[in-house]
Length: 233
Image (cartoon, rainbow, N blue to C red; front, side, top):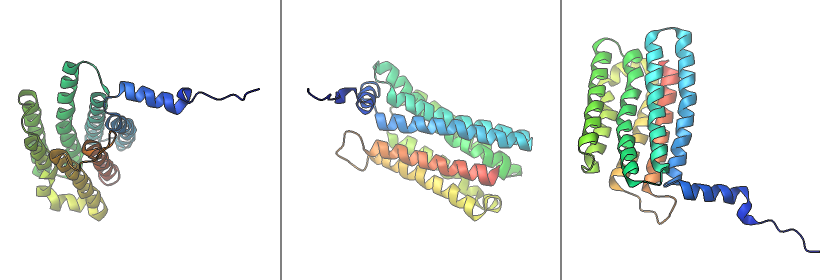
């Protein structure tokens, strides 16, 4: 009597891998950013809970804007890198994915401007960053195929605009908060440089410069979430 030999093609691991390979255009980028979207939902809940306990409208607005900007970026990115069908739909999803980067940058500034900075520091920086985000979104709508170096430079300029408010921010955030703020900026900037240069070149069907870029973006978001949750709220 011969022993039973399970079919390896029916194993949960093989079935899952087969499903992902068939339905995800860029599995690592998509799954990593869907995880980011799930974490962002948890983050929004935690920020809203804290904001509602404080009972100040600026805290609630900050929680909603920052939390939703995280969810929007990571959901848009996850869907774009998953979808594997009509090219015209992929083109639209790609455009939305890129526009959400501007939304996240401005969304991250919002709690800092409303809660950590006072007077014209906060108001001026808030107006400036959302104006730049709007310009970036319009550029993506009208000139999507412009060289990526231009959009990457705008991302980096927006990200590091906070340097002009470094002194008042440091008074509120302290050393640990500033470390998270600058650390997140460095993760985002490094990811942006990797994306712009299309480097490093890795001979792999799974990992490449684009996947590494996505991981750096996740790390940047984590740093800024903890900075806002612990030292701003």
